[in-house]
Image 1 (cartoon, rainbow over the protein chains, first blue to last red):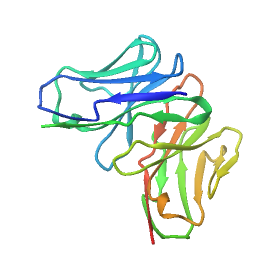
Image 2 (cartoon, rainbow over the protein chains, first blue to last red):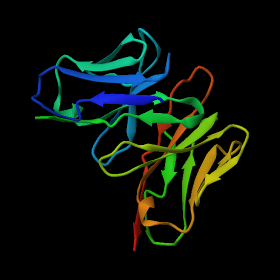
Image 3 (cartoon, rainbow over the protein chains, first blue to last red):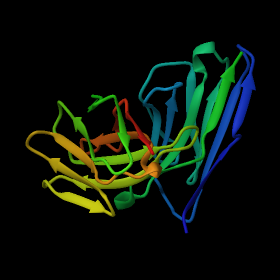
Image 4 (cartoon, helix red, strand yellow):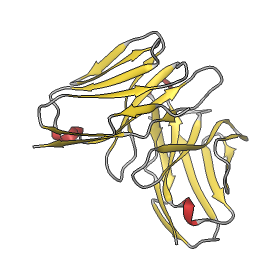
Length: 111
Length: 111
């Protein structure tokens, strides 16, 4: 069966520090992968998506970046966090007719 | 282009019905519906594809009017477990491998 893992679950980071969030998918190959961010009480904002290794599409200009070093691995990074980067980060993969499956999310607080 | 959801919030008593609407200014290939409980990741409910169809399982169903670029989610005889935020996600098809989500509708079902 297909599963998606995302970690860490919670993160508190100081302003200006780096960030690395990792997402891996099991049980499928060449998945379309996505990073979404959700501010408190808000909707889901698409940050990046990838249709294959090394292929990254950016939706919102910001100080975040994404990489896909392996087929089932998707990483969200930042060199220097801003207060506005706080939020709930969700990784997702597209299972076609069964919609998107989301990871359990990372709650990031930048202090 | 972000789809527009209405209403923003709705409060029901157990057993009552609700309709949540989602409209887009762009032609759509598919519409997804998700439910998110507080602090959790969104869960896929159903997908409706271009061609104008209606789907449902249990007491939750949805319709997709391709010409009007609108979809509606119908919740009948609501249960306490239906509480949460409902999101529609729209896909314009083609080489667009991404879902754009509405801002969500907060549904509260009270005893």
